[in-house]
Amino acid sequence: DIQMTQSPSSLSASVGDRVTFACRASHSISTYLNWYQQKPGKAPKLLIYGASSLLSGVPSRFSGSGSGTDFTLTISSVQPEDFASYYCQQSHTTPRTFGQGTRLEIK
Amino acid sequence: EVQLVESGGGLVQPGGSLRLSCAASGFTFSTYWMSWVRQAPGKGLEWVANIKQDGSEKYYVDSVRGRFTVSRDNAKNSLFLQMNGLRAEDTAIYYCARSFGYCINGCYSVVFALDVWGQGTTVTVSS
Image (cartoon, rainbow over all chains, first blue to last red; front, side):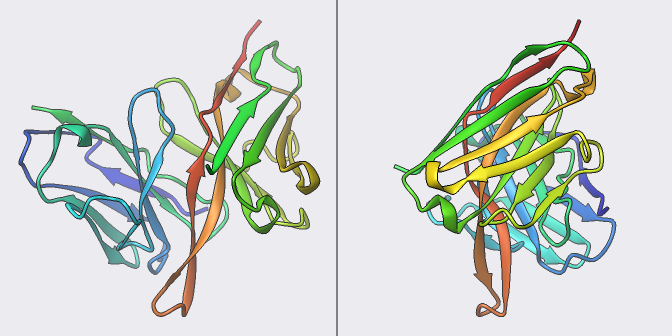
């Protein structure tokens, strides 16, 4: 199975900050990498697919990059509604494993 | 409106069984792969299983293979997860999700992502 490792596990930021989340795959997954946002008590929402393609309707302050084993999700200017947990998921191989998540907290 | 609604969760004793359902509406259910994802209390997301459009292919995470069975009824726009031999570690919110194939690299590749999620149903395994 492909293991997905996210870092850090939590991150504190202020509104307006630029933040970056990292995700690493145990084997190369090309760009078969998706990012999700989850708020407490809610189902996850897809943000980015294919490592860098922004889902329609997702604010342009979100961006993704990477290929192979190393990926990043960046929020260019954090907004109050962005405080949530973020998960990467590989869709290269079954099982479609998720990272353990990064929690974005208010500083 | 595109929607997924799970049901069937509850409290069950270790070793017991439960059948989860997911009712789909607002899209052509029979044309999509579908998945189950779970989240243990205070933990991250875990992909559990998925099933092809016609039910001919099914895949599972190792921890549930042989105990859980995913199925679907396209005539009723429904997805199911039969869970047998339940263990305490199966305690979680179970989400059903639609798997959409997105074109990337000029459609040279298709990447599948979970683009629609239900609200989840809670399964608690405890004596």
